[in-house]
Length: 131
Image 1 (spheres, rainbow, N blue to C red):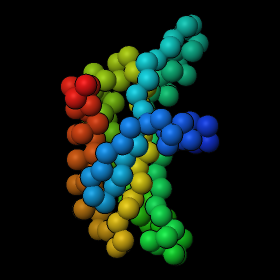
Image 2: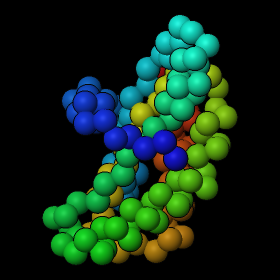
Image 3: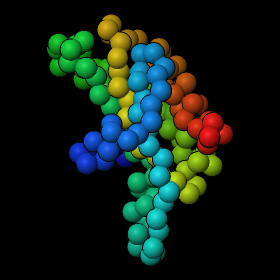
């Protein structure tokens, strides 16, 4: 998984990105065209086509153990299903930055997280047709 780590990119996503909600997630995303100038940059551009960030509110989960568990469940569900999104026509000429925010108040089961991440990815694949 190519993680979204750049503070600048994350701030841009929060200020200018679009969003939707699928309980218990709030999803921020940004689609931008790829700019490839040379052959060396092509490899770097391929790595940056799909980036994802994850977070869990410390307001709802006081213990870091709980927050880390939820993030681990989210990462695993994303890892298993991201190929579907990577193969979508959207990523042929665009890069997609996604930020998943867990907004639930109870510790989730993995099956529920997997099901909801499936719904998130399905919605992201349908994005070009919504315009």
